[in-house]
Amino acid sequence: MSLRLFRIAWTVSRYRLDSLVPQDRLPPVLRWLWRFAPVRLIPIGDHSRGKRLRLALESLGPIFVKFGQMLSTRRDLLPPDIADELKRLQDQVPPFPGETARAMVEVELGKTVEEAFAAFETEPMASASIAQVHAAELHSGEQVVVKIIRPGIDRIMREDIGLLYTFARLMRRIPEARRLRPVEVVQDYEATLFDELDLNKEAANTSQLKRNFQGSPLLYVPAIHWSLTHRQVMVQERITGIPVADIEALRAQGTDLKKLAERGVEIFFTQVFRDNFFHADMHPGNIFVSRENPTEPRYIAIDCGIVGSLTREDQDYLARNLLAFFRQDYYEVAVLHIESGWVGEGTRANEFASAIRAVCEPILEKPLKDISFGQVLLGLFQTARRFNMEVQPQLVLLQKTLLNIEGLGRQLYPDLDLWSTAKPYLERWMRERAGPKGFWKTLQKHAPELAHQIPELPVLAHQALSDREQQRRLYRQQTQALSGLEARFQRAAPRARRLRLGAILLAVALAWQPMLGWAEQQPWPVLVAAGLGVLLLIWR
Image (cartoon, helix red, strand yellow):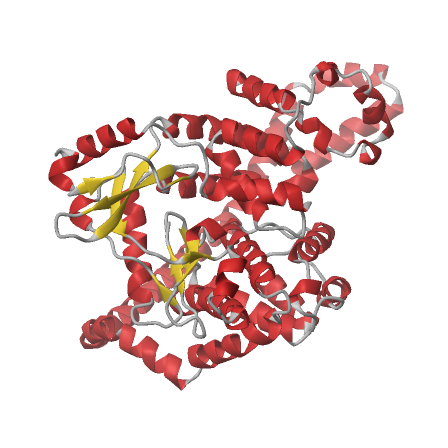
């Protein structure tokens, strides 16, 4: 752990990442200390600030690379030169040797590369933080890609996760940071990251997403070749789409960018609410656009290593919250947060609604180019701190995906009105969920279980009545027993008082003579106190 911390500190110093922080924004004390910091003796070099940041993230490993990937989609939050460099982290991370990749394929498949493939390109097509991809051809002639996990990556990730746990436990000691539930968030992030190291899980996620959008004009998911897929190697159909971030190529083929942006929003809400299974790593490196029919553009999704889902209750609360936001019904938003337990006990709905209104009112009914979700989230977090609202770990993946969607929307069609695009879909989903159609679907879903339980209802009802009668008998017996004990105590009380009085009289009789001598020598306050003591002994 200490070695990893030393490496992080050394990397920050080596690439002079400290120079990215504006000195005029530092507190006066830190600004003064900065003048004498030894790190200033290290030359910055000829690399641009964006390249230095990218190289530092690459050298620190997959967790830091993924952080850079997420930042690269937020061009509204970063200077253009830094955003352009971080964009390279999506699929241009330095690869590991091709011969190592061949050896890993042969170990995983239990056969030589020549036996498994008609052709295999040693030079990788793309290289990311967790794995890299090689082009290949099956003996059937089908073009495929082979995804291979980076060797030794799990050890580095475990070290970084250990550091995150250390930071999270330190944050938990700070009262204001405790509501962020840092340890729970790291636990969810850990499970998500290590799921990416098992390509069997990614293949299963891919198959599920493909099944959900089978025949859909919105999204295409390439097929998995299960016979050649194992824990560290996955073989998948090769696609020939245009990267979604290549705006010039999309325009050159006449792509309807407005419709493409709107379909991206529809795909997101369809995954979250209809399927309850959403692609949670939607940075531009994982999203392509089909070259077929550019006037009716279709997305292509790859890399389903990170997926998310919500409970039915979270789905309902999220949809109702979003609809309330769209309708600018802030009181309803406040009530929903209180009912769900996301804010502190005793929160007044009208006060919470007023605080939310101050944050959200300025952004509604504006095009996407004029809305910064980063600023909105910052304002909401400040409001949440005032009302002791806790971060919900199960929603962290969803929030990350929303940020990615916003970043894509800004690049494709900045004038997209997110609210008007999403609102009709949510209203339709709520009607289907709560209306007769939703009731009928729920009934159909649980029909086998109900068919098994209905014949047992008379038996269950009889058993419930018997249990109730038995509880009543037990209650009567307990009541009678308590009454008997109370009567015994009442009968025993006079006898106990007589015993105490008899013991006192006997003791007085036996000690009468010494007591007279003692009493003659005592002042009257002592005698009064002794008399009170005798009365207390006799008192019931």
